[in-house]
Image (cartoon, rainbow, N blue to C red; front, side, top):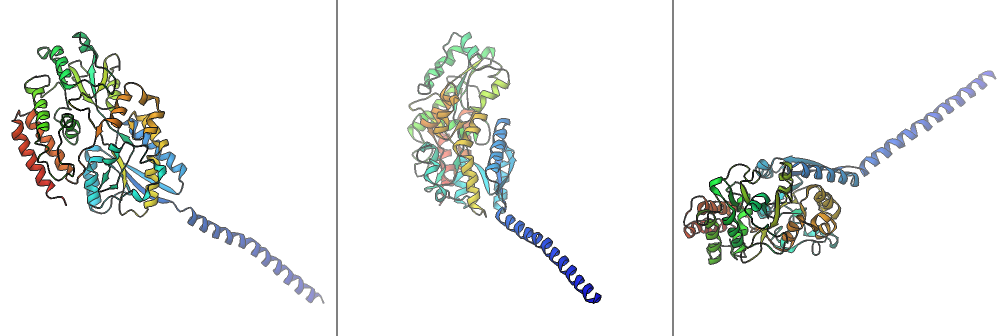
Length: 441
């Protein structure tokens, strides 16, 4: 009898233990299943983003926007790589050729067609919705510079513009008036030349003007100098970007180039070599610069409104400034186009753009952002904004543009530095550009 009782108790005890283990193990099993499901649901998409390394304000703005994006999009992680400007194009093209390029990249807009034509960039048209404001919130001139063969390839964050910076101390010493700050009322180039002739004293190392950033390298020569051609009604190439003949060698363009040469060799209000920091050291009456120079000059101890002033870019027959800046595009072969677009859309949205322009002082690409930031509705930033939106022109959109840029740089060096006959120099430039355009499909 006792044996039966002990056996029953043993069976009962084993049953209790087994039941307890089942209760203990099952929640663990369910927890593992839940974790696996959560991992699948919260899988983080990894993207890479390359941009040119900017100044302190630009880097701060991008870092803050990236942090905001991650908070708003926990399932997308973007690794941003900053590359020095001087190495950016070479590094980017090298990586893209090897097929290892970033998912998202910043492109200097004049080079858009080179990348688009090579099939490296993905068209953005299919991602756009009415909410993106392409038709209503961006200048058509700006967007044309980001479009190739009727496809939009880049989304803009900021826009660029140039203005006339003048040394208030030198003008005051010469008893000359300050140029007006009204963005719609620029001085003519003839008026500028007359002011400079009256105020410069080269024998005392007080010089007139640096009309287009001297004779530098990279894209700067074309960016600063092409407006002179446009202001006289000239062009570099035909509207369909197939030839320079009849355009770069037109009467209007020849007149513009002759004017530029005369600044150095006839009127002598510009010199081929200026002392270092001539404007900052009260040795240069006027120069042409962008928005970035305001902060740069102030960091060097100059005060806006006391030491220097800003006026719209001078005009000839037409008021024209260059546009085009760094904009965002995505790799055509990215494995995550929807997520890549979500990042581009976020960075170029009203909120992120407002933050970026507030920090950097760069002209926002969206009208709505400029309207809501008091800075861009008051002097001097309103000059840059109004010019960018109302008087800007993009450089030729063609895969041949890098070669056109080099040819323009050489042309201005030939007539400015070397004082070569303008028509002879133009003839050589037309031949060079036409040769490259003939190679483009």
